[in-house]
Image: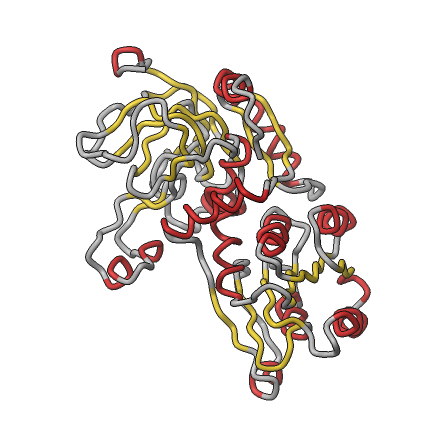
Length: 365
């Protein structure tokens, strides 16, 4: 598609006022690209916990702002200096936008922490639209075996939990715990860990979450509603009495972090990914048991590329709640706020792109 074929107007779902529902209306298609930008015709966009934080004004986002930082689609236009993409390429849209390239984080392979970058769908327009501008340097070309539907939630949920698995430093045959294992991040973490040969203890407190953790391959599933003492007993029974080498914390429920520490073996690591207002840990877990708390955000570009390779090779799948068309976003939000959603909620923005990929006869994740 050349620039002459790109329409002037498009449908978008925007935050126009804090703590109010999205406004779904027409806005201008962004065509003025910086040299390293790409314009993507969105195929699929998904909902993330961070979207609620944007609505609540926690990032002081300048409004109006198009929502969603999890998107996939097809490149239709490239900036003058883009070398790694061409029109027609399938892409996982990047959240990081215009990292400075000169700060300590950018120079140390941790550019995802760059304080000067902007963030798609958080500080600038995102993927709940027919077109989105993203940074060509941080967006990732999709492997043939990865579908648009799987790629969109990988742009944040996948990148976040994949880095958590890496930060756990668990190796094949070792035990990892995931508290919140049946959630949107947790069920992906189980699959990434199993792809690396790691044994997984999945902890959740919802019937839907426990079922999803089991379905996606957790070696043992433990109901947190049984109480900490019973949970620890069940975890120790399968880990030789030690507990997990490392535990990923993707639940922000009260007491979840303390429970995560309890199922982690002495001198082990708890990787904190969830973002509750505060993190409360009994002192003896840190002082007497030497549990180390390690925060983790999202993957670097190199880790993101590796993640998509793992998705393609091992068929990592996303539990999907699919809605068709941007006008269906209110139904998606109702499901998400109802507390019964399993996995990820997503909007198919452009069915034609889905049909085109499916007609190619590829074995897609």
